[in-house]
Figure 1 (cartoon, rainbow, N blue to C red):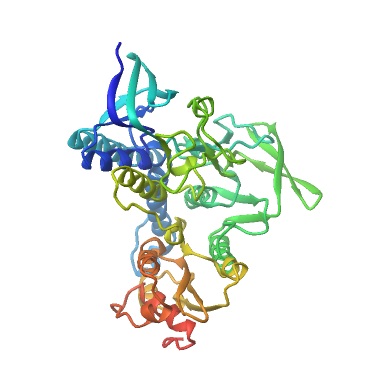
Figure 2: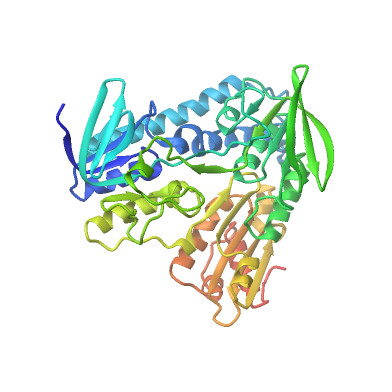
Length: 466
């Protein structure tokens, strides 16, 4: 069969891939998007961000019904968990969104080519699918294959007792004892889901803090809140072995040279993700990688092979769906001679526990390491009127600013709807705002974002409500 010609072939149909494909089509390019999964959307939509948030929201409602609604004067009687119904709702949410992406492809005349894509040569992608093999030729190829679960050699996955995030999204029953290995976003979020539904959850983390890389003070606040909810944490601890113990597992933990054992019905390995480039043919084509297995790109997202571009989890930077989306848009706009760019200093990051943790920019520690003399302002949600009305007062807002210029360097939030409140801080940083700019911006009362205003006032030590 003769090769088919396109202006752009995107390999990968996740958030970065499908966003780039649609934007390229809007710019007049003939686009094909190659993906081997049964539905578009990548890890995020199918087995990551979206199903986990659906379960987080459902499990939080269950937790409210069983623990906190009475405090609002709402008596609900005997509350029962219908796990199959909860899982069915999750799948309905996922299906609706993945079908939505397919609809957007039709609307924008992007061709979805089902199958596994491989870089056969410069300007050529070979796709192997159920219908056979197709060869797609294009002036430009974008690699957007995302990432995969990083395995842990000491705890090999079996998909039943020792699971990854994929299986943890669909457990057939609430485990009595869940051991989570890794205190990053994935481990904390899924640990929260099953903890709310009744599991006894213990989280082990190799480092001395949860959510490594975020502001240390805010990490401690989140740990305190999750501990109050019943989750247990064992820091500076690694899981070094597991063996069957009846219907459960006996896991060996090591901390500072001392070993101990813990029983678990299910172990979730959530130590991170790694770029997914296996079988892509990138190395064979001569594409350069760094020492962490990430594809090297220039300021135009072009690899060492002309005409081949890469975005998202396969290149350096945070592994976030919205980061991949912005890179994809910038990449195709640059192809068309436009001024696409990504501001890596203003990319928000969220841990969707309850309370949520949302951050943007530099932590106080990182700002200091970079040589900045910083001034910080904080404001607790216990002093925020809307948080008190909600009955959700765990957490605080922290603004990190340059002491000389007052420019905002970072904002860190632990609290209710932090994922929404952080958007104001992202816009402020995108426009180079000072703490004073946020402090003098009128905020509706009573609202949660008032806590951000007060924290900004706190940089100059003039909070009103504490």
